[in-house]
Structures are given as structure tokens and as C-alpha cells.
Length: 508
Image 1: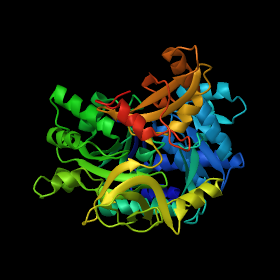
Image 2: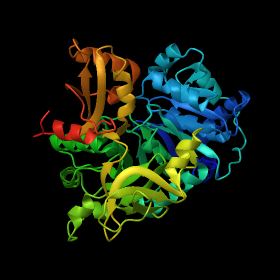
Image 3: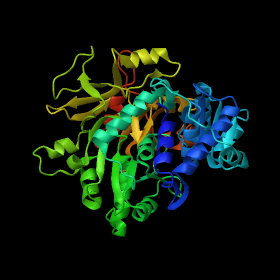
Image 4: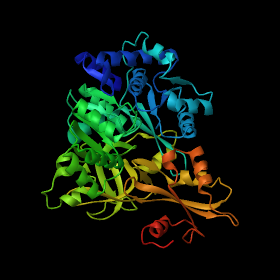
């Protein structure tokens, strides 16, 4: 099933329904949305791009993002959406690794990319070249796609320092869509999907629900997240649905409290990217009402592992409601989940082990990385690398992360990629990066540095080095100079000991 077929279907059923909005301004109905995507697709086809090819998207949230996505699918190619917050160097790696035939960009992030990699084929959506593509004769039909065909190549950070490409197939997307409709929320034609979180990630994956339902797709004027703007836009549009990281919800709640608002206009906030603290979600419900649904997913099983529906997020009558609120819910209808031991054996309720998942939403594998695929999908089960436990009712609680992943503001940071950058500084002998709890961001990135003899800590220089190599959100918020790093008998750094020493009450 080609996702472009969903757009064509809605364009025929509800041709004049509002589709693409900048703030509250309608810039395209569904007939125009489908025509634009098909026309841009024709432009891609003229460049020889077709089934199986990869096309990058590196831009901030705007309606052209959705036009480009569906244009890519019209010709049967796969989209490679890249987080606009990434450093251009990181974007170049992704484009080279995916062998992207072309990349759609917006000038605000595309210009630095063009300067860094002048030979990369780019089309800016802010130029006449893009508008000419959009105004040409459209393709008559979408290219056929099998369930196994890749439609989305999602790059997730890797422990080796380079991100891995997750192959998300048409079948994976269909399973995610069905899981949403079965467990997460309903979709009605007068709904508005708001894109405040990056379209390159979870927020964008939910666009399919809006297209199938013939809903409005609204991109804020800021092209990102601003709490006051978002509350006002939701109030103006009504029936707004959005995906948000916990830190975004904290800011929404703080803004609503300070401005005396109650979330009017918001239908549903789906939150993920890490569980919320119990006190934070209780406050969110108290301030904004029962509008929240929690999901747990990974790029390798997009948005589709577990769900805690709004009735349970808002419930205060169940004898174990607090325990459930601290969980990430139960398995979605399209997924099976287990907690297993080192040999892959299922563990009894209440026992902490690795979370594994099976089902039609699980990725095909990693792009051009058979070894990583074989290590991650074992006997049909996806090894998430997350540690957790199941209770007797099937509710999953997250505990630690076996791969030392740091989740800050809903974005993933793997320590190794930050460590590799810091090690380039001539004053650094050793470094270990850990995540520490942070009230607003969930976790903050902290670099523990052992300096070479005779050198002193220069935090500004380390910051400048990181900003030159990696995304701003990945750079450490703190640098701690240590005489040595704690290690085991095999020379491996004991990150747990570092975290304990740096936590309140610990000894450095």
C-alpha cells in the first residue's frame, strides 16, 4: 500500500476540506494538496527518481514538508526525513549513507548544508524551482508499493557514534495506523493535527492518521514549539491533536498556569520520548484536563509498542492508579511485548529485564547494516535495549537503558557520539558522557573529563568544539573535571558509578 493512495482517496472523498494550514490560514484543500504532491512527484520522476530510491528532507516544520513527503511516495521512493536540529555535518552523513538522490530543504537550515556539501543535490522549498515543480502537470497515479517496500528511512543515534538507518516499510506504517485507531485515539474530519514537534520524528509519523481522516494539518508560524503560540493556535482551530515530548508538556502547563488557560481547543496530546514523572502528568491533567495519552515506541517499532489511554492517565479511582500512571501502559493491539533475561527467556512479573517486541510494526532491519539487524532482531523479536518490568496485568514500567541512551527534551543522545567529539580536544585525555535527571528536560547531558597533565578545563573551547560537530541539544550542559574515571577490571568505564557520584548527595 502506497501512502499516497490515502491522500488520493481523501482528495476524492473530501476534495474541498481544508488540508494544509499555516497557523490558521488554509493554503490548500485536499484536492490541491494531492495535486501539488503529484506534480512535485512528476518533477522527481523527470530526474529519474523512482521506486526504491531515497529522497532526503531537511527542513523546519512547514506545509511544504508534507507536500514533499507525499511527492516522494507518489513515485514509490522512500523519504529520509532529517531532524532540522541536527548539525549540517550530521545531515551530510545521513544523506551520504542513504545515498539520497535529492534532498528537499528550507533555506534556514539548507543554506549551511549547501555550504558544507556543495555537490549535494538540493531543492529549496523557498525557491522558484520548487514552485515550478509544484505547478507542473501532476502524475496520474501513485506508483505501486508492496507491504515490504521501504517508505521511511529513519536515522536513530547509534552507540558507535554514527546513526543507523531504520527501514520502515509500508506494512509497518499500516500496523502503526491500525494500532493508533484501536488504542490511542479516534480521528474525526474536524480534527486538526498540529506539528510543533519535529515532523522528521513522531509528529510526522502521525500525519497518516490526519490524511486518512481528512483532517487539517497546521504548522505554527514559528515552525517549531512555542507554548503560548501553541495554546493560542489550538484555541483558534479547535479539536487539536499533537504529539509532544514530556518537556513540551511541562512548558504547556507552565504557560497555561501563568496565563489562566485550561487547554480549550486541545483534543488530544499524545506524549512519548520517555515517561513523564508522576507529579508532572498529574499536574498536567489538573491544569489542562483529561487530554493526554501516553505511548512508548522506538524508531525500530514506530509509535507502536505500548499505550496508556486517556481514561487511565486521568483515572484516580483504581487502587493502583499511581503505579499505572508511572508505567508506559500495555501492549498496543499490533504488538506483543515481553521482558526477557540474558538468554532471551521470558521473566516473571515484577522482574527487570530487557524489553523485546514482536509484530507487524517492527522494522524490516537497519539500512546496509546486516550485523546490527541480526543483533537487534532475534527469532522475530526486536531487542529494544531498554530495561523494564511487566506487572501481572501487563503494564510495562521502564527502568534503566542497557545502551546508556540519554533522552533530553524528548531527543535521543548516545554518549559515544559526544565522547568522540570531545576527545578531539588536545587537552582531553579521557571522557565519559552520562545523563543525569533534570526537572525540565528529563535528563541533561554531563561530560566527565580527565585532562592531560598540565592542562586546565576550558569549557568554552569544549562547547565550541561540540557546536561545530554535533547538534546543539547533544552538547553537554555541564563539564566535570575528574582525576580519573571509575573502571572495572576490564577497563570499561562504570557509568553507573559516575551517575551516582554526580547525583545530589553523591561524592565526586
